Image 1: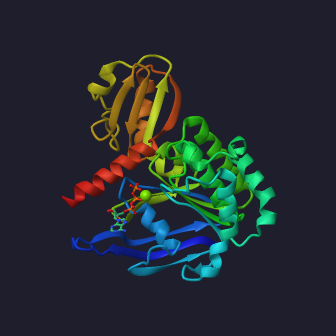
Image 2 (image 1 turned 30 degrees about the horizontal axis):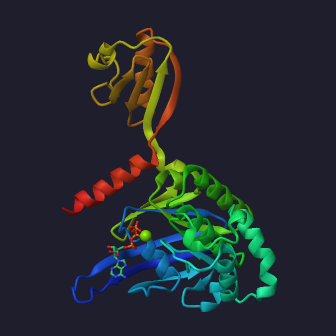
Image 3 (image 1 turned 180 degrees about the vertical axis):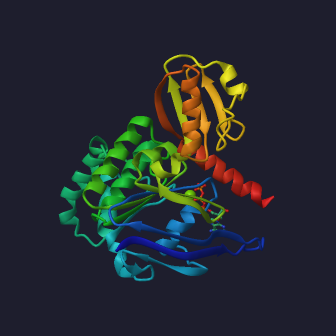
Length: 322
Ligand SMILES: Nc1ncnc2c1ncn2[C@@H]1O[C@H](COP(=O)(O)OP(=O)(O)OP(=O)(O)O)[C@@H](O)[C@H]1O
Ligand SMILES: [Mg+2]
């Protein structure tokens, strides 16, 4: 069973007085397996928060349906199995860290007497024990996020939604949060993460989706999304002359391939990047190098960063609209 199943969700915000309609989700579908860390990426205004809010029943979908933990999102009984860290959350300034968690524990239906141990556990997990008695009004952004994360974990949720969890947190704190997320995953929790911090998501997610303008643009394992199948890097032991690339002295005997069709670039004196359409072309490049007395050290598949993929997908999407 999938932890999250979204089927053709559309959300149109009807403008109030301005009468402007915004399609925040446009026929959006995805599924997240149980136990996965899933990262949803998209630029500002892409519709990430709207998706989470729709799944949690805070926003009503215009059309489409979704299930959480196998039940329709309209089933309120699933709510106590779900945790949520909202984007830009605010807690009352006059409460201490401990009182805030006590408040949320009681909202979750726990008795105040039984909550103390769990609160101490959570504060230690998010490294906030020493600030237990400090009022939230004195908290830094990072401390607020940690407390928010503790709040989201209060009821040992099976599924947890985190909207920009590392927003405002320094690199050490971000690493700590990543470790917490991995611990949660190892305990079987499914984590759905919204972020525009690509490297963050890349480091922690099993799968990611990239969205813009309410639409799903790409979804998959980070490794699969960033591997460019027919692009290779060839490193050599001895230097390659620039003529090798420029002269295009393709072997006339090779009817199948010539350098005219192959995108080939000298990255440095001992490094060549090639874009080929098949294995035959790759071998043709290798043969040509060897014929020129160049020894090959390594051949590796070229990887794009998630950021490169993100930027190119969003640029294409927006360019296509003009
Ligand atoms: N309550 C609302 N009423 C009208 N429009 C809204 C409302 N909430 C969001 N929108 C619009 O819907 C679109 C998607 O917004 P959303 O907050 O879901 O994006 P996001 O991907 O979470 O962005 P960010 O990265 O900035 O948090 C935006 O154009 C936004 O202006
Ligand atoms: Mg958002």
